Length: 232
Ligand code: ADP
Ligand code: ADP
Image (tube, rainbow, N blue to C red; front, top):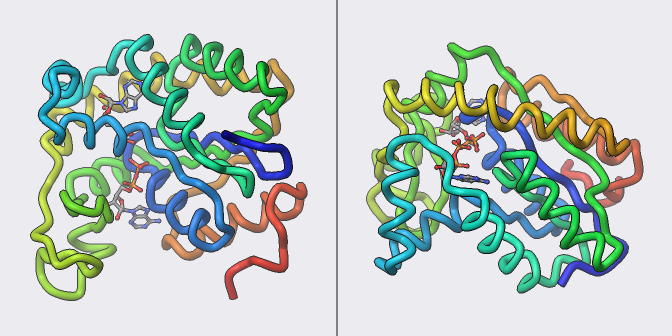
């Protein structure tokens, strides 16, 4: 379970902004636990469970999985982690109702979210990033055909598995996902704003190392990350 001391940060931004890529690097560099709702839901699907079958229809269509299902899965995942060094939530909460339920769960242990890290990029950049995204179905590592290709064509650098394209990473589905982001997820920004949670906005239309360094600098400056552990 989360204990005091570590930063508790929600990553927000439209699909393709780079939440997963930035979270993965910040987690590696600073020893934080990174929990991605998309990865956790995809693992449930891959398990072939009855719940996984139910998730498929929402996810492939680019729709949001119902709040009750996601909230239960994510609060369970959070409670199973020892994230005393810090927690990065990526892709959750994605609706105001999810944010309220998460808040109630964290309030019980007196450990509220301390900051929202908001990544953004122009829509044409998001579409190029999503349609070019490839993932490793085994270890979950994320690549891009142009901007972050693997060393060997279509093969994961870490585990050697053949990369795949997600079923929902098509141009048609991406428009639906971006639209849902504006309708359902942007109000979460206002929700945290009203609670007085720190809002850190980072322009994500830059090379990944630059985006990570901007985010790390901002989080260090407000004392949520330790500067001594910053990447060189
Ligand atoms: P999100 O989790 O916000 O949907 P990802 O981190 O999965 O976004 O990134 C989407 C795609 O864009 C991936 O293919 C990733 O390799 C690529 N990408 C992410 N950040 C950058 C960046 N700053 N510059 C170029 N490509 C990026
Ligand atoms: P991206 O950041 O590229 O939009 P994710 O991997 O975070 O993609 O999510 C993929 C899909 O998983 C979403 O389109 C949605 O169907 C489902 N999903 C992930 N997180 C949530 C959430 N918090 N609430 C509802 N559905 C979710």
